[in-house]
Every structure is written in C-alpha cells, then in structure tokens.
Length: 323
Ligand SMILES: [Zn+2]
Image 1 (tube, protein in one colour):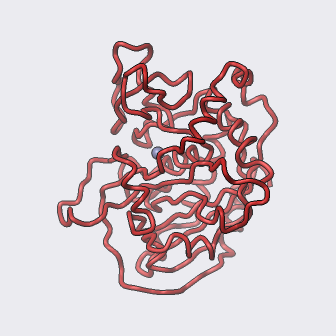
Image 2: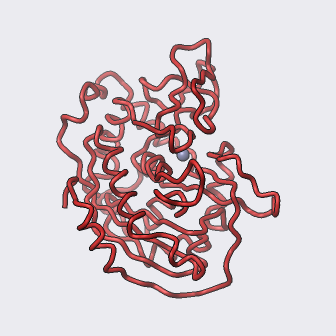
Image 3: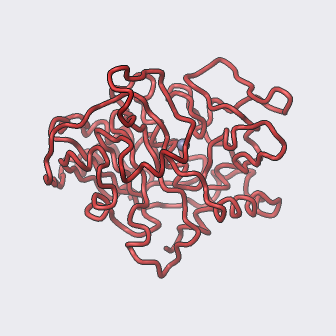
C-alpha cells in the first residue's frame, strides 16, 4: 500500500480489529500535565548528527520532495483501559494516518499502513509495562514504525528514566491541582534511532523501539489545542532522529542545538501559538514556532524544514534501512 492509501480502505482495515483483553485492573487516574518524554540523544547519535551536518551530507537539501520515496511499514496499536474502550474511533485512526502522510510528504517519506490492532489492558494503557506490551504487539523489524496510542499514557516505572532526562515539557497549561504528587501524563515519547542496532540485532535488542502517544491527542481527541494529531507527528520526528528546535536550551555559541542548519537557534520551548517569538534575539532568525519539532500547540504546527527532511533521510539510510 502506498502513500495514496484511500480513507475507506483504512477504515475497512481498522474495522477488522484484533482484540487483546488481559490483565484488567482498576482505572488509572487521568491527569492533564503533558510532556514529550523522548530521551536525550546519545553521544553516538549526536556524532551522527554532527557528521550529517557537514557540507558533503547536505547536498540533498535543495528539494527533498523530488527524491525517491522512502516507504516505511507502519502499524498502529490502540491500547485502552476497560473504561476507555470507545475513546479512539476508526475515524480518529484514519485522520491520524492521513495527517502523518501529509506531514512527511516534503521529506518524501511515506508510511505504508499495515494494520491496526486494539487491546484492552489497564496496565498497558497507562504504560505500566512498556516492554511486555511491545513484546506482545510490536510488528516488523527495526525499520518498521510501531505507534502505540494509549488512553492513559503516563510516566510509569518503565518510563521514569525517560522523564528524568527531560526537563522541558510540552504543556497545554492545564495542570492538575487534584493530585500534584502523582506522575504526570505524557503527550508522548518515541525512540530515537540507536546506532548500535545492526542487521543481525535480535528482536529483543529493539523491542521497545516505537512511539507511545496519548490517545487523546489524536484528531478529534479531548485535549484542547493538542487534539489535531500533532503529537504523533512530533514524536515520529524523533523516531527519525530529529531533536527539538530548542535542543540545548541556550543561545550560547557552544550549544550545538538540533544540528540542523535551517532552524534558527532557540533557547526556550514554545507554548501555545504566539504570533512571534525570538528567544535568541542576538542571533539570526526567529524561533521556528511552526516547526513540528518545537512544543507549540497543534494549531501552530505546519512543517519540517528542508534540512530536517534531509536529515531524516540520512538517518533512515544509516540507522534503520535494511535492519
Ligand atoms: Zn519531543
């Protein structure tokens, strides 16, 4: 199936759903403090960025959409608590996929939709057992994209290491006053490419690879300003190796930022959708508030830059293709 996958075919796929129903537990709390919990990049990944940002590696940036299409086998997994079984509709799944296709078109990256399954599992829905959930649901190999849409995604034991490495959050301004002691919910997180994975790596080596997305961020979801599907677009950008436009959070010349030449240096993550923002006023360019790799609200998101598109293609070739 190719990028032109029709809407009705996707709906027919999603109506033939595989249901897992295990380990039911009581409903977990749903809080409203959301973050992108993607890990900080490893030294090896930073080295790769450094290498790709050299002039020789940037020759393809002029017009990435004219390049051969990269086709990526893609599976969606909807994981619900028993109380939220009906939260994710087939229309939301289809709209999320359509947005995914459109957002990456300028990079000539296409997501070959392989199918969707649904699970009812209160532990998995709050990401209480990331590894076991993915052991049961993950499909394909290291070059396959698996996205888990979880109704109660939150920081848990299995993701606490992720949270502790991330201090800046994608926040919509709604903070729970009811239980500030509890772990916050996440908007999502995704695995950055791991340079250590090679063609002989085993499934166990990359079992947790993929994207975990709070289901309420899907198009038509319940989180105001963050319910157009932008979170999945942002997180899949991490899966392709992209870093935040505000990486390093400093205007200093020593801050290597996102290693992308055509995103201006930015020291502060964007909240909401300001008319204009310039967190490094003494450096060229305004903050790229419409870029998918900032923390702006969904209504602010518009595009990836040409250099980001080229970087994703370079990362694909070196990190995931054929693995
Ligand atoms: Zn992020």
